[in-house]
Length: 332
Image (cartoon, rainbow, N blue to C red):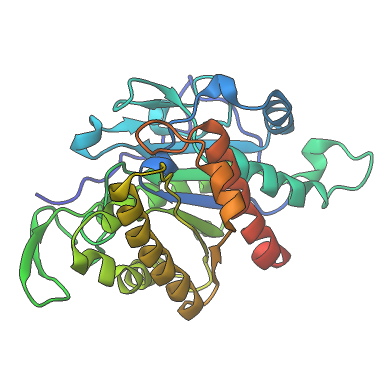
């Protein structure tokens, strides 16, 4: 079977919130990865001042496709498969968790808001001074870069040759990923009343993934850096741009005292982090969002299953946002 194609965006849907076009070029932000990028944060635990600031701007909009992996419980899409304001209440529904949840997008949005607020002349009306920020999220729990995100796989259940030379039947989300992004860009083009026929471009892709590869085979761990470079290059090729910025986040994991298995996994995870850091150094317009052990300890106030909690997700999002701000915000 071939990869699914998303239906045309329904910008004329009566249930869709009206979105006013930007006064300046909109900012298009893509989030991709696995479980922590999906996010298991609790909406009610978001800091009230953050929610008030982001929702009050009325310029952050969100569309998602999460948990398509059968192990996570089926596909979950934005209502109407359209952009909606980024709101804490009823933000994203997780079929896997059977509840509403939030991810690191709230931390990323905070840092983007800091940058865009600096663009505003004092006393100007916010609708006159701001650009819309469109946040696209395509994230799949339990997915590996080696198999599930493999850009070599252009069809479902396709047999490909792995780096070791052995054939392997894989199911890749990459075609779905590209179809989702293009559908979002078409919708943004309509919402922004863009002319000329050219789709908007993705300004930055934030990546938070690697735990499945760290816990997988030696081949998956050894080839993580190469696989990430292949993914980024394939994505940029599909989008027709070599300038899409990439921010890859360092991976964290809580290690309980006395747990040999968690220490062993943490060492493997650091190997993946090393490869991801090196890959970002080899790619143009890419940066590794790093942090020290003290920051990592704060992020690892995690859920029992090792996933980051609400505070940890916000912290990771802010760290990614700061890496974008430091390295790429000047290109706006």
